[in-house]
Image: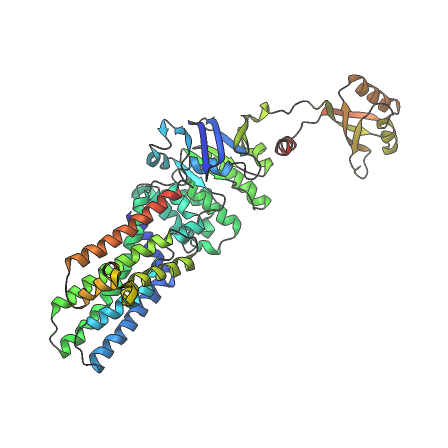
Amino acid sequence: MLDIYRKELFTYFWSPIAYIVVPVFLLISGYFFSFSLYYLKLATMSNAFHNMSILLLLLVPVMTMRLISEEKSSGTLELLFSMPVSIGNILFGKFLAAVSLLMIMLAGSLIFIIPLIIHAEPDFGPIWAGYLGIFLLGTCYISIGLFVSSLTENQIVAALGTTAILILFWFIRYIGNFEALQFINLPFEFISTSTHQGDFVRGLINFSSVIYLLSLTGLFYGLAWLRVHLLRFG
Amino acid sequence: MLDVRNLTKKIDGKTIVENISFTLNEGEILGFVGPNGAGKTTTLRMLACCTLPASGNATLDGLDLVKDDMQIRRKIGYLPEVPPLYEHMKVVTYLRTIARFKGIPASEQNRAVDEVIERCLINKMNVREIGKLSKGYRQRVGLAQAILGNPRLLLLDEPTSGLDPGQISEMREIIRSAAKDSMVIFSTHILQEIQNLCHRIVLIKNGALTFQGRLDQYGLADDGITHLVLRLEGDRNVIESALSLEGHGISYQLGEQTSGSTEIKANVQFPENAATQTAILKELLNQNINVLEVSPQAKDLEHTILEFMRSE
């Protein structure tokens, strides 16, 4: 597993992906954070966390698009099958590498806390809750991206497909805004990732939200495992 | 020893490989021959643990292909038709990555990688990025990853396709040297490869095994024609008139005469009739043509296999 992890991390930093995704994430979330702090005079991270969630909708697909699709198109997935590496190890190594890149992005954003400390006395509880939320959301996005990447040999299709699913999960709670659909509002609100993220942004660690995001991560990770396993029958 | 028993593969209900059985012994090179779509690649993929058989099984040194697949994978080296390479890596980085994937102990990895770099003649390229290598070098790097760690069984899918004659000859040498440590199965379209490298062949057509055996066992049904090669000395026109002797139904092709020499090579196909051969040879002698040599023309493997491929 560590060998796959090592290779994936190497690929992120060899290719332009890491050098694009990390700065783009920090620059854009930094811009919105500064705007909120200096213009709106809001000395909190809430807006920053909300903006990060939206940014990840667009950046995680770029991080995950090649994870399996590239191995499929170049024939190296077959090579991995012929070597003593289990499918579980292949997937977990890849998943962990993407999570590591996410952690690097989030670690970079810790710098936002410095101006908060300078200009105000921040309450660290909601900040750590927000970070937990964004981390759980990011890993959930990554497992969705991992699954979609296993469905195709085309990286662009993988990226667009992942974006589509992530956006669907983010906005699906608004479906209840249509009057005719209000009777099914509750389940849509529950499965929407934005509902659960809202709690973390407000500084709440809601147990059901943690369980939900972990379950969604597990579900798509499991689907990716099943999909790659089925490839050996083809 | 590899023992393949009734290996069958179906994809979407369609039988791709049906009941293929063969064995492979120590130090043997086995050639997989058959037309495109015959099931050669699928059979190799099954043996490489890339795809699971629908039924049947194989054992390698007593290990079961399906049940003990993790142990089997430690004993095989596989080169698919398109070499599976990480384009962005340098050759040496790629081979070290593969060495780790193969579970070669850390203390031996560098030595094993250096050894295959040496054997596959890629020393000059080892710090080049794989994406920038020529086809021949890509193929060699692919072969290098397959032989890394001296696997017990080496599976090579058309390892020489698309290479120039010089590269083919080098590749052949590498495969031959790899066979000292491993049993080798390879499929190829280049039939001279089979004659040059293989101890035995397996012919596959429409997913089924139609022949297996040593090369020298292989013969076609008698077509009733004797092929002889004659080395003759004399006037070309006289030779032609002697060979065209009426009533014997022979056909022949005369080779080009080299300048300054009166020697001519003739490929002659006689009906299976000793009297005809005698009559023609007598006629040549009567016409004062020197018969320097009469030898049977061996039906070459290529001809044999082409006939097999064309036949229903």
